[in-house]
Image (cartoon, rainbow, N blue to C red; front, side):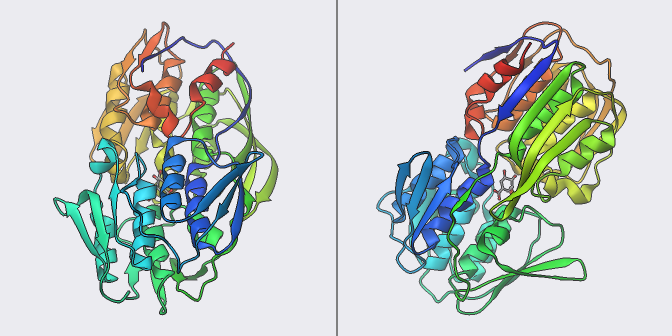
Length: 428
Ligand code: S3P
């Protein structure tokens, strides 16, 4: 699908975002592991969480929908079913990596498949620790999906220092560890999103700046009855769109504000953005609140590589903010972006090139020379079937002088099905 975007002279309005994708997927998986019924309110309709939901149904969860809530009857850890068909994870790395942990822990044999993008993403990072825990995993070229997962020997506990700051990898190992009698421990040096630890109330200790998270079969799996907050990663597009537009005021209600996800707020504040947070509260184990953004003059920023895991999904749209900020901005230490739904550093560079930006692509990031008066006539953007590249390109299109074109615009539905309607609703 091709989308044509007109320039915006003003952006105004109030938005309710799609429910958080990471929390939705965990709600489905952890409800499967909980013995009993979880009432999950505000489960995401986006493609990734729907892929996860159908996988957990194949593994034995019974799902009923009533008055906007999902009632998920879990099997508990001991009665997970062997699926009679392939588990289709669609575009979702979170589904494939977290479910692999569950399958290995439970000793269930299954085949995990995904779309072309997911089959091009390395699974070596999960195969290595899961094999140490006793799994046998057959992967295409030893690294890529489809994955055939099997475990014939006893589950072994693992003490695992994360080689990369990845919440998917951390969660995969902890989920397998939840089935073992002895403790499995994951040691984290740079904190990545901590939804798994929060929602499962896992034991955590900090020793000399290292976080040690433990899991074993002695951990009870809590009931997953809560309301999922709006997705901060979806809010990111409007926070940047509002910050770079001279005449803008956007209020985003009920957004997840987990500090391991919300580094963009600190980055935009450092750039001089006008952002206010109201109504801060807890939604179950997760903080949430309303955010108001208004247009302002931005200045350049160098992102501390240590906080890259806390803004990893927001970097495509952060690059757009940097283009309209006075001075030279820098993203470094973000090599992981090359392993996302597409090689996002390449895709961000193509997006910036399409508008004639002054920038340099590095192996682990970008250097962008910004200008608050930067302008371009019009552009055609490739999204490489990547939802976040499509949406970041749309935010950039609002600053053109003439209509822009976004290719593969349907990919936005992977995380944000109502994105194009919300965008149209803000344009004045
Ligand atoms: C996610 C973790 C991150 C993030 C992805 C969702 C999760 O991936 O980019 O969109 O739900 O755990 P990595 O763990 O690979 O960094």
